[in-house]
Amino acid sequence: MIRGGATDLIYRGRFAPSPTGPLHMGSLVTALGSYLDARSHGGEWRLRIDDIDPPRQNKASFESIPFCLESHGLTWDGSIILQSQRREAHERALSKLRNAGYLFACGCTRATLGELGACISDCRDRIDIEGSVRYRVPNDVPDLFDDLFLKKPRVSSLPKNFIVKRRDGLIAYQLATAIDDLDEGYTHVIRGGDLLESSLRQMIIHQALGRLSPKYGHLPIVTDQSGNKLSKQTGAPAVDLDTPNANLRLALGILRQPNPPKYMDCVEDILRHATINWRRDVLAF
Ligand code: GLU
Image 1 (cartoon, protein in one colour):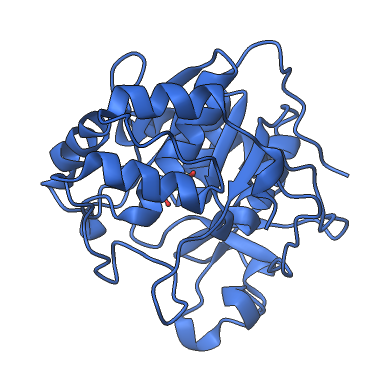
Image 2 (spheres, helix red, strand yellow):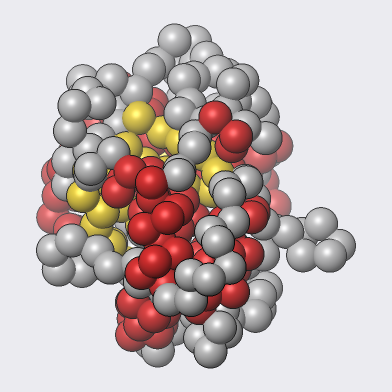
């Protein structure tokens, strides 16, 4: 079994939004959950903007995301980290993984890919291919791992391989995040439950590099009325900046945390109460 191995004695956590639009309630829940888990353990909480996919990015969100966090009292330690600045480290990790035989080039198009977007053709046996770069997942990957909140994280089946560098030359999310989470020294990664399979892929990359993964905790997924996950790309409404107290109370409810007393009417008091009363054990979903 692959385990998160970082020690509990120190704590450095992060919130790592992609700048693809303003924060919606789902992202506020993730920001708040990762903030409270860090602060209630006396930890640091960093903000990294995952800006490695320019075609999908929205310029305004580089400002609107930090502004929204600050409006809710969610202040981070240090300066904002931009994932795009880490390109050299990502390329170095790719070379290591390539030299160790984990990668292969893939020339498939959407039409020729198999289940879960995996390459199922003979790309890995050819040397003449220009295309994406894929990571070959070993056969003995467990489907369970320790989680700070979930008792039995259920990971649906992983594809046999996944993209680490895209056809257009951009570094893929899995690789960039796996490397940055190690290099930036996070001991804990608290993120949405929709990223469970991604966490496993990132742990597989950590293992291949001989490094210990952070501990992972997956939070409840926030859905709309038809049960679809709230997402910036599908136009989930932006958090209303005129009602930060109510937004925090709503997010705390989604995280199954106690509602701070009604007389608390500023974000600082609400967050102080929420930090003191933070409970991990109610978060299993
Ligand atoms: N930037 C990604 C997102 O906003 C990933 C976050 C993470 O790695 O926790 O979904």
